[in-house]
Image (cartoon, rainbow, N blue to C red; front, side, top):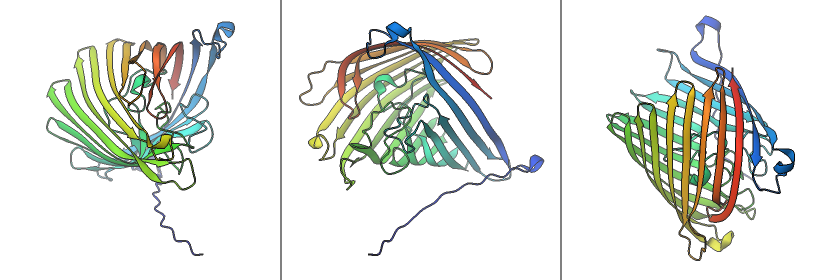
Length: 356
């Protein structure tokens, strides 16, 4: 039997010749770790151990762009290695505690246009500012990093993004977007594919932006080896970002819907509403913030009430990095199918990082 395949390969080679270097940028690295204490959770044994020092990670960065007159390209990559990489070994492309959080190559067009190819941040609303609690009840609609193409441009007071993401991670079965905390299926159930995304932001006043984001795509069945693409997903977000001197605020209202693949949950339709807010205040090396979110299930037959999550925190810039003190409390969660559930969780995090 003959087999035909079309293979598209994108490669990059960056060569530096001292003073004749064509790339303005370079390599850097960082390390982070944290102390975690979970309250009233027998599974963690933290009441006996007084918490754990864990989640260590080494982070390698590569960032650069062509010097003036030498081209219009730019690139950015971030490799995380270690248990604190925010990656899921059962559902990522490496099968281990390392992952490419992002890796893209871009080209500039005109004054503000940029085309990015690779794994980049999905232009959908905003991501939380906290370090360890993560996207809480944004749950898959916060810090999304998917693989595909993204175009970004600005026209006067208008900024917009258009993107197509072929899949939510590298490989054929990975569902790991690194920082999304496992809200887009698994390697044995389904994954997000063929997603179109649009985002439009308008500067209504200095420091004040209103925006709308939308995404729609397909869900691929991974329960068998056939890989049938027969599910769908879509979401719409209305959001705001305002800055007032040392203060800032963010608000968002998200509607989401997923039609599961036929072989997973019998093609169930899952719907819910998310509301999120973020407040921040900067004073010298200090930064104080609060992330709060709410999830309201709209799925037919659901008996779950609205659930909420709150993550107050502060960080201190001590020079080569930051120290973070954060608390997370929530009375519900969002699972891998996007369904809202009930359950209490409370934890304290003390984290530190440094960068070279």
